[in-house]
Length: 69
Image (tube, rainbow, N blue to C red; front, top):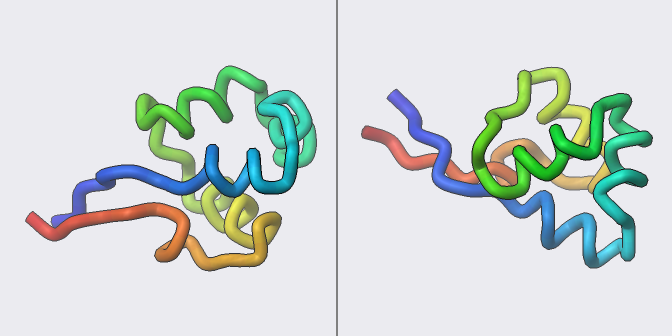
């Protein structure tokens, strides 16, 4: 089983000088959803995770950190 231990969404977003609202608009979600993903309160659906990875030109595996239990 895998456990999500963190992600690079905030770092990637700030590197591009995007606000949470701008990223949310690009992804078709709320700003609160982006915030929740960044702080680890919400694990995005697979389609959203893939969309984020494509947006930031990376892979889901590189953006989201997991450890095996």
